[in-house]
Figure 1 (cartoon, rainbow, N blue to C red):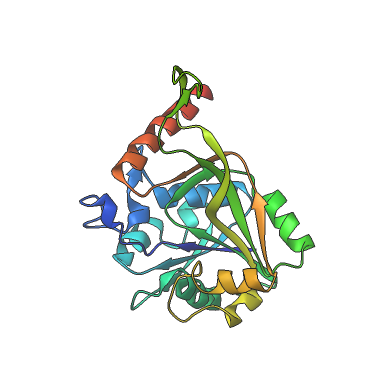
Figure 2: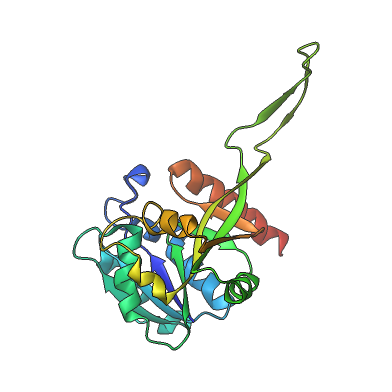
Length: 234
């Protein structure tokens, strides 16, 4: 099975870190976000990767090359103009040449440590054209527990998990999805709503480490979390 990594983000909210590099090449503990993804895919036995890139794509190619140094095989789908997530996947699918009917697609700005193989099995047993990894939604703020009768504060809960699920930016999709993907535009606003309306879009609830890197605050928190995980493993 191939994986497509969407790595064309400008990362405006991470400026000036992204002034000379694409967002997935921003470093976390001295390693690009994109490298964490590639190592995660390899850990899950996925070694054929297409990187969909545009802005400062040469930085990605210089670092990863053909993937040999990372024990994977990498091809590049270079966008001459901004295609969005849907258009980026559509173009990248042309570089996927295996016989597997399905492909993995990921947003290139996330770091995660979740076993994807049960999700692959779930998708292949379903009739869904695409399956989205769903991860728990955590409050970005601490929660104050208040007694409704007296208004006395009982305690505080730091950024608790809420009873909702969000798009984790990891997808497994049948290659036939190319027929409903836009030439340019985001998959979240085009193909996915259409497939959901037709009952062809599934969700797989997954737990494990997951962090999207959108801001400098996310970057700092990811470094703390990864450092703590590394220390706990000895």
